Image (cartoon, rainbow, N blue to C red; front, side):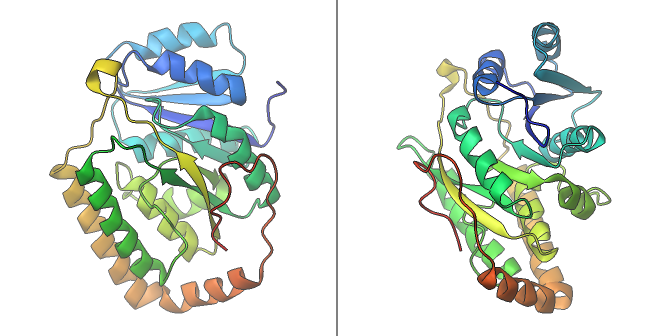
Length: 271
């Protein structure tokens, strides 16, 4: 496999556990290069991956000195990519929840639409926790208010391809969107800046603790963070961004979408 010169995979990881090396190996089967950002982990994963990277030229491991949050880790990977000439970064979870075989299709759609944000629309398994599903539905509604309509089918799903320069422009100077609020705020602010969202279906896996599944989401703390984020974004939309997003939406309706590559998960593109 010839490494891409424009598109890189970024995996943020914080105490992901024993599944991490297998997930990285799976991604490397479908795409190169891959950057794993160890976000202040204390589980020994940094040493294990650095040993793997020593014999794998398609893999880079970045180690952040302290846990700064998922958003901070993705932005660190994007900064690394920009410094080396990459234009796009596909972010995905490091715990195996996302399917690595979807990476080539998402990258192909991004290459055909380099100005777009290519968002995953999750196909949930039957064992998804009900509280997560209901919480997502609320976030979908609130994000539609923030962008004045449809366009972001699932603001919390972290499997997506970012155009690096616009991402760093809208979030790099800010202090917000560094933890679990990153996915939704990044998508909304990119829309406000004129980056068109495209949505592709992507299957999701949920692993039990016995299977090595790890979640650091705190239902009280992190839902409060998300609630504050939604309130802030809606207020900003009302007082600053409404005229601009309406102009962007009119322009998007006239643009042509290019779809390339396998189509088994691409039937739900938002036009």
